[in-house]
Each structure stands twice: as structure tokens, then as C-alpha cells.
Image 1 (cartoon, rainbow over the protein chains, first blue to last red):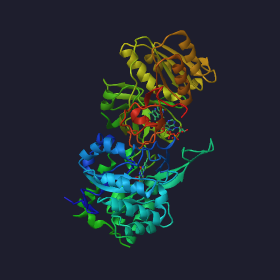
Image 2 (image 1 turned 45 degrees about the vertical axis):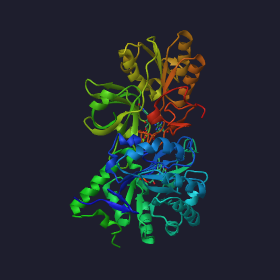
Image 3 (image 1 turned 30 degrees about the vertical axis):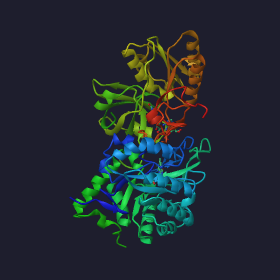
Image 4 (image 1 turned 180 degrees about the horizontal axis):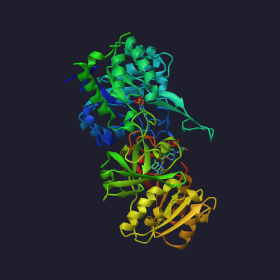
Length: 303
Length: 269
Ligand SMILES: Cc1cc2nc3c(=O)[nH]c(=O)nc-3n(C[C@H](O)[C@H](O)[C@H](O)COP(=O)(O)OP(=O)(O)OC[C@H]3O[C@@H](n4cnc5c(N)ncnc54)[C@H](O)[C@@H]3O)c2cc1C
Ligand SMILES: Cc1cc2nc3c(=O)[nH]c(=O)nc-3n(C[C@H](O)[C@H](O)[C@H](O)COP(=O)(O)O)c2cc1C
């Protein structure tokens, strides 16, 4: 029996595989199709202070080895989340991370205060990296000082561990990572989607209603890996690796490059059981390689 | 219950120009399937194509554990499916979504299909008739060679009328013209429709004006098919999913539909 458990900012996960925000909704649909209790955790779709309708169609299109999306953070808002989504999530036998976004620093803090009162949240993940919004969204995540201001405000508002989700759409991701570390973040997760676009040549129009969208899936994995490696070397915080992970080997690449845990996103759309399959493959790898504790591999990249 | 079944291809043949019928052995899905529901077929274990492909269930035979799908080759995924041979195995997730509901009366209902929107209506017509209801089928295509053979159409309805845009088969013009003439003549209890969005919008408008209930099956571009990505949403006037829905203005087609009461949809939105 290999030990797959990890310690994430004081929070113990049974294994390092979580479902990424926006790719598992609030758990209800997937609970019928896969064993959520076999995962390290589930991260909610981003919630915002008020309900958001999201962007007009088309919102998604498949691209080579990837998916472009411009959902626009469609979500019921924090009130409906607490009243109608949290009771279900709370009963799940896995760690729940609640992902939040807001247009102002004050709103981020007010959300954190309210979530702090709920029993059973494992951590907050701050989304300062959504590329599909007119305001707010990525604006905080591309500027180290703004990102730090959000983190300071949220840290003051809650005792919960705070994970900061970083955008790859910056010149140097380590600058934002070091800024949020100094501001008190407990962990960083990366990457959110890369800004991308697709064109319909017959109509000579953008395919997506929002014109641009966020690219995810296997196409972004090498970019994500390089960023995880750089950030792991630049900060002392645990790193959650995200981007195109669909097999145990993909997850291992991230762990070896410096990730303490990983998040699985787009892969779940093709296989609702992808996260569980990855956990199984990680375990098999440890058995085959005689590794007793998977977390020993974090950052073990020989260079 | 939704299952990811390991489907075996039992039959696969061309039935009209660029249109294929594929029969899959999927006993659980075949037993559970209801007209209007769909499956998500996985065409590769690798990354190309990355996502599954949604296809409507065109018939389900619980006795032999088979479903039939009908599809038109329009791009990479449908082309890839057309190459797949008998006895190949494919992951098949289903049955997904909410299907059609029965009319209030046993008088014939009208099924209006445009292009490759026909498959769910064929399944519906068979099940309606098996349950003691009657059905009339109106089906439109661009040209005669895109029409399915009558062997596929006849089991679904007691009367079938075809139209083509170019006049090479049946009524020359749009299938909505056929519908108009029918609705002028007979008081139908229900209109069911699936096809291009513009066609369904016209059918919905016509039914609303005449006060006839209308159910449409929408085929929005989908990623997951199970309600977790919110990629396939359509604008709605009101939500059927209750006050807990996160989906006030936009409803997810894959789980709230693909079949909707046509008056819920904001056709201009
Ligand atoms: C619930 C549902 C049921 C469906 N049932 C059937 C069916 O029974 N038979 C059938 O032939 N097709 C059906 N479709 C459509 C089918 O899924 C698409 O034709 C297929 O995914 C196209 O993939 P492709 O790679 O071959 O072509 P692509 O290159 O992806 O697309 C080719 C063209 O088709 C359009 N298109 C792509 N996906 C869709 C879509 N989901 N809906 C409408 N247009 C699309 C594109 O805009 C493009 O113009 C259904 C779709 C849904 C959502
Ligand atoms: C359809 C879709 C919706 C997403 N929604 C969110 C979201 O609400 N909040 C967020 O922080 N990230 C969101 N993401 C980004 C993912 O969590 C993840 O960072 C990204 O998809 C890269 O991982 P992947 O390649 O495994 O999908 C979304 C991604 C997709 C594909």
C-alpha cells in the first residue's frame, strides 16, 4: 500500500487529485456517475456575490487537442450556493474547496466572511484568473499588487486556507506568485485557461459568442508544466498543478515538476471517471516503482 | 440511470447520401432509453477527437439490447464514426437528458423533422404508436437523396409527407409549409419538432399563434452532455428546473432538455 495522501496548507487530502473549478459544477451531477469520495477533493464552480447569467452562445468549441470555452462564470451567486448547493456538498465524503470571484477587493472579503461561517469547507480558492469577463476576472490576476490586495483582504476575513488560482496570461507568472505569497496566501493553483480564439471561415466570424475564450485540455499541458516548475522554484508555497491532465502519467509530470496536488478539468467531460482513474494509476505507479509515499516525488525533477 | 456502456457495433450501413445507420449492443441503455434522449459516443481513447459526440437515440430495442443511431457526415467526428467497423467497441454514455412527454389526446400528433433532426422523432413515433397514440410525420431535406428510405419512416407514423428545398422529392419547399397546411385542416393535440434552429423557431411560432402545445428537441454544441460544463445553454423565458436552478436566463440543454416546451425557449435571445 503506497501512501498517496498530501498535506495542503494544513489540510490533509487522501490523495493529490482534485476536480477543477467549473468542470464538476457543484458535485451533484457527477455523484451519480463516479465515486467522489475516492478523490482528494472537489472544487466548486466559481461563485460570485450575485448570480451571473453567463455569456451568450456559442460558449464552447473543440480545437486541436483542446477546448475553448467562454462560459462567463454562470453561477447562482453566494446566497443560492449556501442555501441550495452547500447542503449537498457538505454531505459528500471528500474535501470541498469553494472557488470565489468578485469585482472588488471588498466583495472578495465579504464572501470570505460568509463562507468562513459554514462548517466543513476545506479551503477557499480565489479565482483572479477568469479570462471571460469584461471587468474583474483576470484584471486582479495580471497585476501583482492587485492580486496581493485581494489575498490580504481575504486572509483577514477567514481562518480557512486560501489557495490563489493564477492566470497564465501574464509575462512572468512568478511575479504574481511571489506577490501573493508575501500577502499571506497558503497555496497557489495554476494554470487557469489561456486566452484563445477560433474563426469560422465561411461566416468570417468568431466561433464563440464572446469572440475569445479560454483554452484548456491536453493542448495546454506543456505550458502549464513549465509554469508549475517555475513557480515551484520561486515560492515556498504548495503548488496545485492544472492543465490538460488526463492520465496518471500526466499527473506525475506535474508532481515531479513541483506540484503537491493536481486538478483535473476538461478530462472529466470525456470521462466522468477520469479523476478516479488517475488516482488508481498513481497508486499503481507507486507500487511498480516501489515508492512508499507519493508526496516524496514533489519537485523531484533532476536537472 | 446513466451508464457508460461498452457498446459493440452490430450493424452499420449507409441509408441516404452521407447518412448512416449504426446499431449498438448496449443492453442497459436500450432498456432505459426514452424518445428524445441521447448518448455521448467516445470515438477515441486518445486526444483526437478530445470530446465525445452527442447523437439522439433513433430507436431502442430492449428485447435484443440494441439502440440505433442515425447520423449525417458533417465533420471530423461524424466522418470518423462512419469508418468504424462491425464488432468494434466504443464507450457509450447514456441515456442522457429529458425526452418527450405524451400528448393529452389519442388523436394523431404531428412530428416535424428537418434534415438530420429526424432521428429522435422516429423513436418517438414508434413509441407513441406502441402506446396507443397516433402520429403523422412531416420530414424535410435539402434534396431527395438526403431523405431516409420509407422503411425508416413508416414505422414511426400512419402517414408520412416529405418535402425538399429543391423540389426533387415530395412537396417543393420547406417542411414548415407542409405543417401550415396540416394545421389549417386538422386540430392536432401536439406538435413535436427537431431540426435546424430556424425551422424549430418557425414551428414554435406557428404553434404559439394557434395555441397548440409544441415540444422541441434542441441540438446545441455540447462538451460534457451531463450538466457539468454549462457549455450548451440556450436563453429561456422561464426555467422548468425550479427555483434552485443556477440557470435563470440560460438553461443547460443537456440536462434540462434536449426536449423543451417550445414556449420556454427565448427564440430571439
Ligand atoms: C442532443 C444532440 C443530439 C444530436 N443528435 C444527432 C443525430 O441524431 N444525428 C446527427 O447526425 N447529429 C446529431 N447531433 C449533432 C452532432 O452531434 C454533430 O453533427 C456532430 O457533433 C458534429 O461533429 P463533427 O466533428 O462531425 O463536425 P463539426 O466539425 O464539429 O461540425 C460540423 C458542422 O456541424 C455543426 N455542429 C457541430 N456540432 C453541432 C451540434 N451539436 N449541433 C448542431 N450543429 C453542430 C458545426 O457548427 C459545423 O457547422 C446531435 C447533437 C446534440 C447536441
Ligand atoms: C468549461 C470550463 C469552465 C471553467 N470554469 C472555471 C471557473 O468557473 N473557475 C475557475 O477558476 N476555473 C474555471 N475553469 C478552468 C479550469 O478549472 C482549469 O483551470 C482549466 O480548464 C485547465 O485545466 P484542464 O486543461 O484540465 O481543463 C473552467 C474550464 C472549463 C473548460
